[in-house]
Length: 162
Image (cartoon, rainbow, N blue to C red):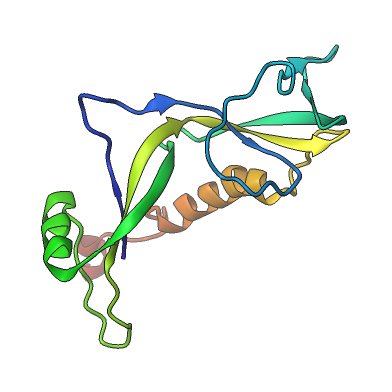
């Protein structure tokens, strides 16, 4: 089971902009970058543009829908049974005991930052709407909300009894 531990109220998470680059980098954490190496600027059309290792990148900002926020987390730890019960009570997560599943410890991830939008970068051109990172927000969240929303055709219990 996985749980995200909210930040300490005395130390609120910082707001960040996530950048999804069209390359594989064997690092997945924050880095301090000198502006000489990463300094996105708008081009003549207002599209974010940057250079990474000599390659021109064009960016597309993706805003999360109202009521959603993204979180950046730090690797957590696997807790033993006693600490697991304490953490479940503290985070108010229900423990589903499924007999078919192998018993695993509770993995806790610590929230370190949050974001309301992210930037998807493409080589030489702006990424189109078929990109999975864009489609995931623009289409799939809306689709999931429509599937789980009560339909207009659904009758209330009282109407069905008549």
